[in-house]
Image: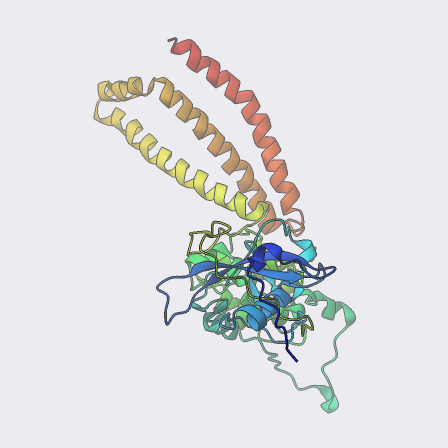
Length: 263
Length: 148
């Protein structure tokens, strides 16, 4: 009995290969950087078969799992909650897990690169420490001077809760801070995310340390560095009206927080 | 997502690149919207106006040194290049002025941040209206004063 082994196709598979039913082939241009081997970042292209409903994160997974295991990026929940996979996709900060292929122009390559303004560590990974340092500086935790009655919760009216509802949505993904032209050039600036999280407590009726945070943000590198470019508002994957929140903090440094008008 | 598809055969490493890869190792230009570009324009026009004012204060100060020197400098300005420079100066000042009002409204009007995009286009329209009035007049003056 003889086994005939089919001769391997010698043709260029790239030309002949067709994506499976329903899939289409898209090209990703990824800005790669390995600090151990590269002097500076470089661009590399990858072809990936994707469904229109796939996310850019799925395409990155496909590359990492099937084509190039050295591709490095952060992701955790993959559902837009943990805020790990913020990156620059086609020149704008977005979460890779919330960006669908069908919402991008796939006739052209899709550019994927790391966030701007934070130190690049490897491929799509940046050092988030300056970002979290600014976040810690605004004291993002409840500081109440009173003891709640009868050992119960501090009650709050629905209206008082609504006052800062928008800024409670932040997931600390850094998409806003690293979209800010001021932050790119001035690393000392607190950045939108820190101000958003300060806003969340400044306008909380249960908190008593609003003035402490306002004094911190009234600094030279505080809210007044904001030049209202609205990049942060447009980059936020949670739809927080960030520039509006910063404006309200600006107003609160001049008047008392109760007098800041709500639009 | 765990892919159940069979791993695609890796394409042979091609010798000739299929597409030209971007050279910029620093990354692409951030694609901001109206807010970012209005800020960029505000900066550029602001710096331009600053340098104009610097020169303007110096040439005006010359009148204290000697009126003849002042007249000489002003006469030197009367050429078509400076005429076009004046056009650019007015364009920069008009944009900077209208956009400055927009920024004041963003900061001090509680609905300012909500309507910033509309206000940007209002600035552009106001700029176009003013420039439509000024640019033809200035160009005619240049052509009349400096016939070839």
